[in-house]
Length: 242
Ligand SMILES: N[C@@H]1[C@@H](O)[C@H](O)[C@@H](COP(=O)(O)O)O[C@@H]1O
Image (cartoon, protein in one colour):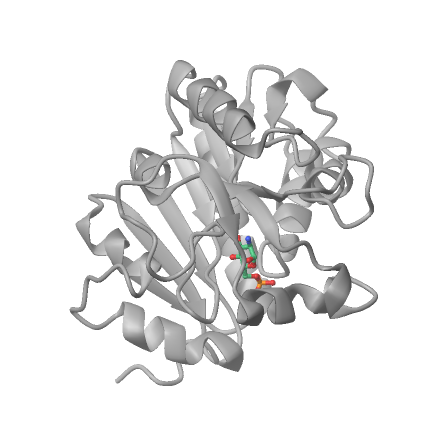
């Protein structure tokens, strides 16, 4: 794993955006794996700025998001669909057909998960996967204890994960209890991975990630066995590293 230490959230965002931009520029038919949450917001904004300043052809780009809340329709203001539409798909003027995300309102979540997994597999494979990390080490919505082999599946969210995401909802009770997420096996199939980490809140998780431990108790630790992972961490996130 390659660790790039940067000064702050802005520099992290600019650095990650540059890597996404370079991938899309060098391979116009690239498949990007995308994440949601607070961390990548700045990355998407920086990418949009860069594409506006130095236009590239994005008409053949394909994107696959990691996860979606179960029970939220795509039009729900807190759905990851809406998040991506606002921050990525519309500003980059992508066609909806280029953008993929699990359907949170599917009646049969497991069937939807299997459909989504097939879509990812039938694509030419994710070239570059952007990841954030939960305080408990989750990636996507793969909570501690998830099998490293898991494919896209339905998960029950931990209390702490729901609490961490409650800030985006009116109240914690409104945070869905379940989600559909790419599995760790799905994520590990991507050709390269960028993990962005920012803020004191993530310092403990980054410290644990940088230790030797590889265990299903700490999902992100599987990244040690991936051949091409770049971690971009700001000063605060890296504050517990020696
Ligand atoms: N499913 C998302 C993850 O993909 C994200 O990495 C995590 C951290 O979010 P934040 O970046 O807001 O700290 O939140 C959610 O659980």
